[in-house]
Length: 218
Image (cartoon, rainbow, N blue to C red; front, top):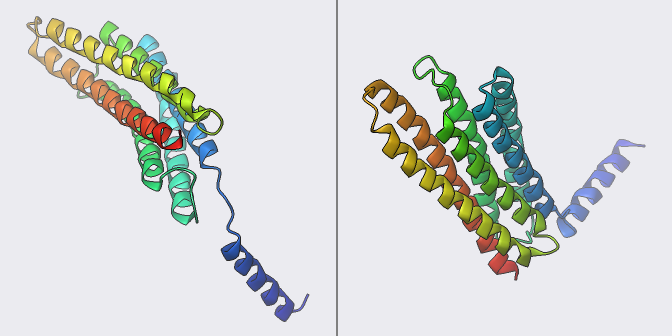
């Protein structure tokens, strides 16, 4: 094929892409990313239950894959001609889903660090379990958006209950912690409890975004 023909073909292709832009399946992207976050939350539960180096590595790998998915999804969003969901809602969802993984990774890194060198306790495991339950519910809700968005309301309610349970566990754990006379232990444990609470806050934001999307779609 001559250079002229190649250039003409390339121009025609670009013109068609502008007139008939490729549609990105944002429902599928949300389902994929939220499922990955759910897996990462499961790894945090595994770590809190076993304190294993293998779980630590898996969470690190999950963090890197989460960053890749977030960047890809945000790039596709920026390039999209149109979206089936409000752009701002999609942006919030992509960002805050990844922040849950970042929180899980930060918690493990801090607990393994020389500064804290902290072993998981019962409260850490319980809060991680509630976080996982909430993330699982949110992931289910995002996964339903394409075909049955109205069902996402029930998932959002489950996630809300999980966040409330995490908060109750946090308050009880702090009350018990401050009965300790070891101030160094109080400082170290409080830091991890606080980070688990922040992960719950991120989950709450994702859940609010899910509800916003459900309302708009229904």
